[in-house]
Image (cartoon, rainbow, N blue to C red; front, side, top):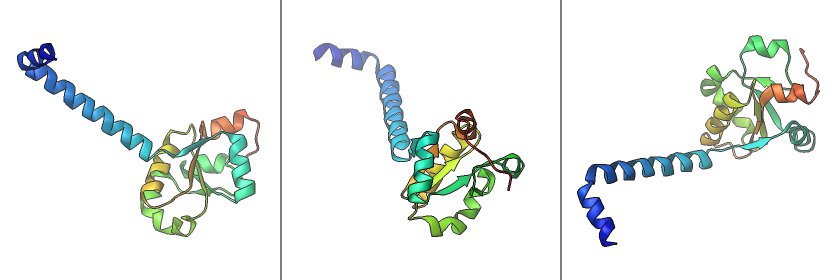
Length: 141
């Protein structure tokens, strides 16, 4: 213990930097865990949609949505999600399944929804690409 105190007193800047980095890592992990949505593979997503009547939210842009989307999905582009949260309030108590092209944007959408009071939010892991890889259908209607 004496060696540690001697080292710390001789290298204040180094120890201070270590403490700051450690605090930032702990904060980042806490933020990540508290805002993390459940990741679902396509099979689990289908069960959620069929058994719990989940609201399916496509956060891709309109042009991508029109090329093909999951049946009954609502298109709320990520760029407009913040301004359209009020229109989604009626779904706060229902399960919500969000997806995008690869799962990254929908992860951000899930965190935003959780911060807005949505309690049961899920992210389609791998997005629509993973859905297509599983040979699951898309619709253009």
